[in-house]
Length: 225
Ligand code: 6GU
Image (tube, rainbow, N blue to C red; front, side):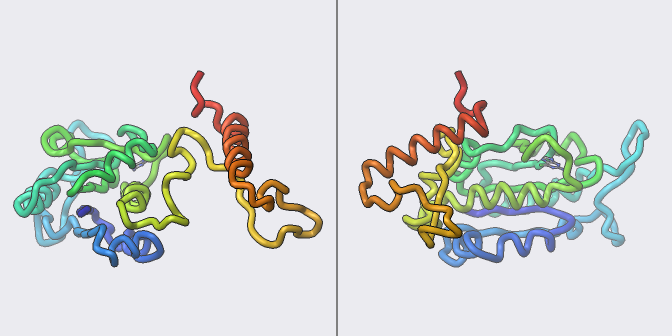
């Protein structure tokens, strides 16, 4: 998979993609991330990419030309499955959407700032608008990092057996069960006996029960009716 991210702050995205799983995905050649500084397509020598909004009101709007030049330049070399724009008024990101996006080949991600981007870019080029939750961020970069991480770890070959995504919270609308590691007894607080039993049928049953109990307690909305 290839992801092209257009941003006025690409530096902000360097670290999130340089460690752990995202680094592994790229080293293994399973994920290519290309960061693009929007200002390379600025409308003048001052690097201008935003302007005041028509109709008045506080706040700058990101202009059509730099974004459209960027999208068109990238699209010249390959076909993109989606042009994603991160915005608080987009569809709320969830595991189902992560699963679907992980099956795409090429994605463009546009990170907005200020009051957002000119509506005409949304109308003519953007194919998917994503929010990562009901709160406002100062820009789309952190959303791009969240979505890229959630997608990247699902690419076949990124996770190994131990880290398999199959048992993640949310993968089947259930939270993951509690986990324990050594020692068996820490300050008198003991690990549940069943986990030490070696009986895998019982252990599986216990984990299912605990997952259900945890979901009922913490996120009953996931269980529906
Ligand atoms: Cl995708 N962008 C911004 N600016 N704020 C957000 C968001 C995105 N998702 C939630 N809040």
